[in-house]
Length: 389
Picture: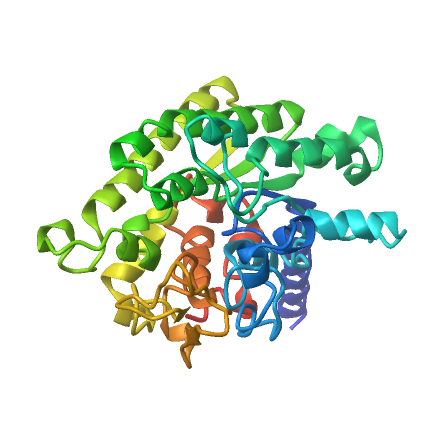
């Protein structure tokens, strides 16, 4: 009897120690990126425009928050599920952080800061402007986000001498970033050949930011690749073609656009490999958004989806996407059950799709190396919804 009791005590002690490790695995999340990761920066930082208005009205946010938060979805994003998996509060946008700081209401346990801005590009705005391309959403680039981060880093780490340690104990999310470097030119009539010539410069901009963050002290960085844009309702509408050979028979996606995404992802992985050789102490994790999403497009019913390439919320047409009638505008329509749709507004995904992508990252197999081996907090967490689908 005493032996059994002692064994029980040992198990309890081990469990307590395990929980302590989970909580202490990372101190914070630092996030950069675009609308796939923006948790409310664009609506707070930009002047009113169609992108600003869209994310500030229902049905944006209707599923989880029940009100718009500035997220370009009906609910949570991948970054939100990662934060929940680490038992952190949802990561506040930089604009809210700055407002709270100016009002003297800065919390000691914010769990990090999110610098992602919807519409942001990896390259500087001047790069696109020289090529006759406008960014209708924002003039923020990845470089600008990095400048914001460096400005407030002394505040986040509480003392300059602790900054390397703080960043080393943080999980850094590098987007997704780079998608808008192609979205803007494609939507403004640039050819595939023209836009493909931008890819090496986009990858270079991402690599420069990763390198600088590592030199500042970052130890663990997650770098997402691009989603399969050929499955996006917006691209399917813009590049609608009567030639059936342009489409994948099993998914309905446009082949050459998905090939474009894979080209970006191939170059990104090559850049990550180069950076790993320069910084062998850093853990640079490639997040395979492309294949995490493609599993859904290929087998939607397996994951509970009834619609993959038609938007839940939009302005009508074959894919329920109209460039002139944005989701949330008076003339738009919205589906009854967003959780059965992959596409939210023709450009962004639903919470249900993001949840499944997050699960593929957190529990495998869609990261290189596997994320579930770097932190106990990624193992079977989630009573909060990662593992229930």
